[in-house]
Length: 235
Image 1 (tube, rainbow, N blue to C red):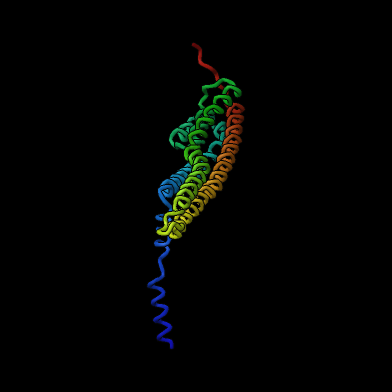
Image 2: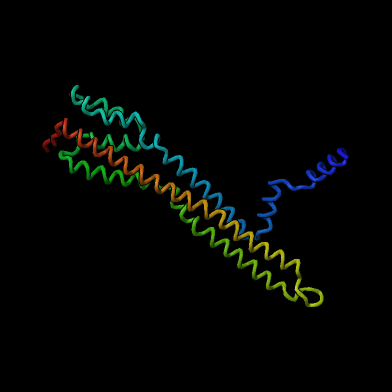
């Protein structure tokens, strides 16, 4: 009895399709539209990875740069801001570039420096947005492709009526076309729903990082013009 049970289980394991085979069959029977949906999923994954790599806090505002910018009063005690300027020039992060601009001494007033740094910060934030707009596109395109596949499946289904030998509908063709329509709908939503969630997450994260950078820059500009006197060279 135990031997027969083991034989039945072994036979079931051999005949049961693998997960990869099920996914392949699902995609292969989705029609030509499924290929475009797969491309959309690849684009969404690529955009998500790119956004995640760019929006890491240690890449935008390393802890070392933040602590150095907040130690401007200690540099004022020494009377030399040049070591901090050299440190920021060699760091390469977004916050270090903005900080180097803020303490460069190229602006005679705090308001002028703040306006220039704000423009520079907008350019940096725009550069960090690369990848996020692509996710927004996938949110719209993937469901539309799913709808296109559904429409194509319905057209094939209605075309199957009357194609049987005796004039009756070909049930095999109709079932296949219904499967194509439903698979494309599922695949389109499967790409669009995660894209919506990831797009919302990255937009919120970018806003939070931008607010923190703005706060640090205001503090940096305030301390620099409070402890150092900037004079415009005469022409």
